[in-house]
Image (cartoon, rainbow, N blue to C red; front, side, top):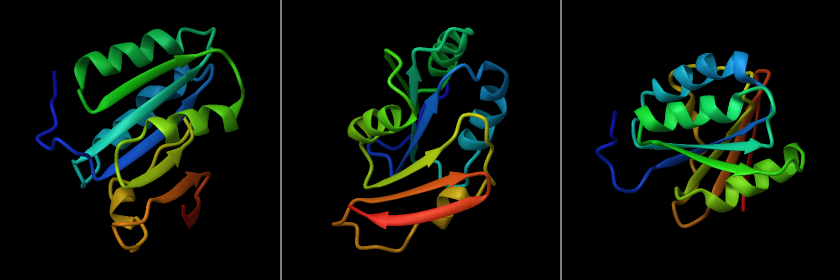
Length: 132
């Protein structure tokens, strides 16, 4: 098992997963290869029926930076909200399960005071930033 050296992640990456088994490996490879290694990846399985659930669990078994939440299908927004509530880092990023990101994606986090919780998202090459 690959383990992170950091007790507290700097960035939580929330990935809602619904029937995207065919894309997960590419997505997770891009996330786990980040230049910022102090990350956690929160996979929120939103009631998948295509085997995505088992794929998520398999990845979590080999890398301790991955946490999996299994829930009944509630839609994309519900899955993102569930992941955001489970996130432990001061920065939260959202990445769709059928996307992959550049290896320096986490380096591009907004420069906000660490006392604020900051969220940003990446979807089809469009990034947005906000503080919460």
